[in-house]
Length: 176
Image (tube, rainbow, N blue to C red; front, side):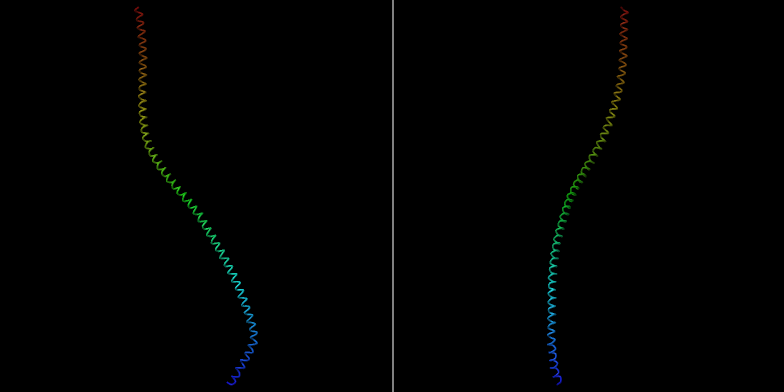
């Protein structure tokens, strides 16, 4: 142990001397490592600031694109709504016209049925008039026959009257 007491101080002294010589070297290496670390940290800060600036630019672009997209959406929705409204009006007009056409068809069908009924009535009436006209024509034909017979009788009477006048003249002439 005596030796141990001598060895420990000697060992410590030699370690201290080694540390002193190597501490200068080590200090320089530490300073270089610190300088390098500071430089790396500074570069990382610059990169971080640059990345944050790029992120901010991208966020602004994204925000602008979202606004543009929202605006385009609203424009498209507005245009589509305008078209939908126009189509709704057109459909309402077509439905109104459809109802009017349906009413006109119903009225026309009713008129045609009425005309058909009147046509049947008119046909019956015309048929009756035709029968009466035929009857009157027969009566006129019969009367014309009678008139011809009367005309023949008149002619015969006139001939007889003429003969009677001649006979009476001849008879007067014989008497005188």
